[in-house]
Length: 112
Image (cartoon, rainbow, N blue to C red; front, side, top):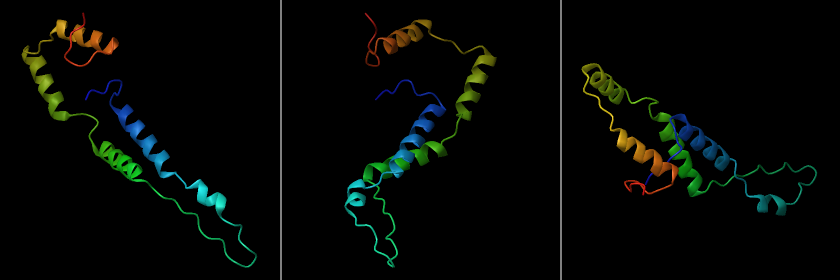
């Protein structure tokens, strides 16, 4: 699966936003049906039910926040290749991927 448009911290921000929204889900139907407390009786506490999907979003959020911002080993490898003069960019491949992304083509399908 290919996800485009997610750069570095964008994924983390989106995951955090979704997890935060999911954690604030409240069963409104139960709240609307509840009777107001009578005098002298302490009110019942509010309850929140978190769905399985919300728990999964929370787990993804925690994984995203735990992941490093920069892959140090990859950066070190690229720096070494640039310094040694062995780093080469296939401009045709870059152009094809840019066009495919812009035209919303599936990965590995060259533009026509």
